[in-house]
Image (cartoon, rainbow, N blue to C red; front, side):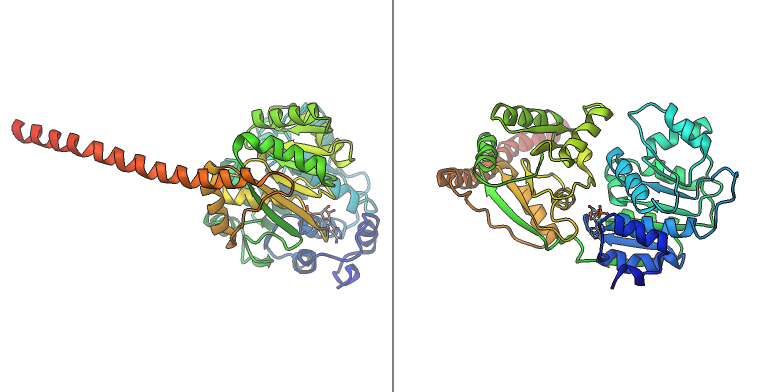
Length: 421
Ligand code: AMP
């Protein structure tokens, strides 16, 4: 279906074309016509499917259906809530891009930067606010934001709002919005708490499910390499030095780990940058922009910082650490293989991480076959696998020994108790 059949106005179609899009993605084909009717929507789509345009375009269409009254201050007609600062910036940029021919005024509200500029822009008047919950609450407490005119609310990456502990703020914010509104909820996964949120804040939503839930998108090839923890950095360097890996996003579980990997890469002459919440907002934005422009071959990031970021053409995602939560695996690897492009997701598994890998397998309903990395000696693989088996065996034996050691003590205690009675 071409974009022209989705019911969008001419200036919006021109904005879409100018953004380089020729064909709508599946979620856009489904969600745009439905959202244009004004109904509530639950969009259950994996990352990288083009969901931002799926909600931004109908919002723009709604706002610019009516000509703005000259001289009248603009009121916030749409609020988009999103879990991270980077996502807020990214979505706001999409609004500017798609809405370039309709003269939209938008603002991204997020923490870590001075509030003054945000206050000024709010005073001048904006049509759309994209916000992270924490900083938006600050504005609400100051009385610097007015939601009376909000017609459309978007909850983006709803599952992540729960994971990041924002949900109470989200509920508080929603309670201050007009009852009469359209609510669009997007989430990569649909755990019970997200369904409950939808049930509480939406009216007869239409559910749009793109792809099978939990199933990594088809354009991503997944590889798993078993390796000893202390050899992970060598394997990563080996990959980067021996394979064409153009734009690589490496995930580390911790900030400290991310900095360490970044340092090792730099020492080896690989141009890289680190992105995590321990860095200032300016540093984070600088890292992200540099990575987007191709200034850095590698960006090493933690889950929170990299959440939802949209960098075109990430060729490889490397899970340096196996994510502890299966859901994070989907989110991480979804940074590659975006919108019609292909990508590789590589996971390095140390013996003590096998149980997390199993959880991921259960979650996505797929079994991995850890492979040897070509040119990186097989001894590592065999050693690490047999180590892991050995470890599980010794863990079992240790557990049994602990149980046995507890038994006589319990018996002794019981006889003491009997004697006391
Ligand atoms: P999203 O899932 O919204 O983060 O989008 C993922 C990527 O797909 C972004 O780089 C978008 O710019 C891009 N994209 C969205 N819609 C289209 C489209 N119809 N054609 C080509 N690229 C698109």
